[in-house]
Image 1 (tube, rainbow, N blue to C red):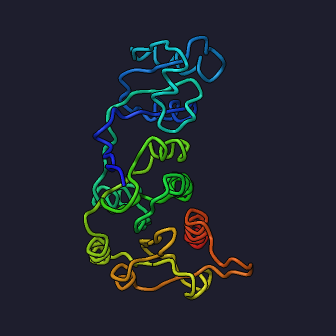
Image 2 (image 1 turned 90 degrees about the vertical axis):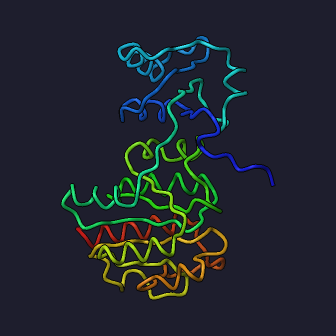
Length: 251
């Protein structure tokens, strides 16, 4: 297995028209924008206009250079080089709920490995009013350019905290008054469980589910009823169903 890259190891880049526009809208510090020679259509023109107004360096390069730099394989002729991603703390996330005068709603990802799943979860979490996402430092995907692209800009608006130990973080969240709810295939169906209070929703790894120590920290487990032959859902789809249930119960 090759060396895992930390975000700090490479020049942080945002790729594709929509992610670059969202990064600009969110006020992210962008050092330079590289654009394919001859790209001047709608979205790219709007991005370059904002870049000019903010004094961001824009460099025209040939498409081959963008292809060789791209980490997502889908740069759409534009890559922005920005300062590295800054992770939040767990307290930052709880403070965000306090500032909004809302009951905390936190999503904890126990070792999600697929960047597309992580990006999709970020995207849905942002739509569901989740205050922040907590991930482990090891055995899990962090914020990478592929995650940024898959999140469709949501990563600019939702804080992500990285913790050394998920089980002890869940203990801390309980001390702060949150109920810890774990997603587990065989458990009580989610719609029969009251999830209106302050919630930390824990989603397990794509293949292995929740780790034993993490599961033991959960106050209760919720499942998603299955009727088909394969009896398992993609992690980001399962997360979406559960997040929307919390939103539905709260409204």
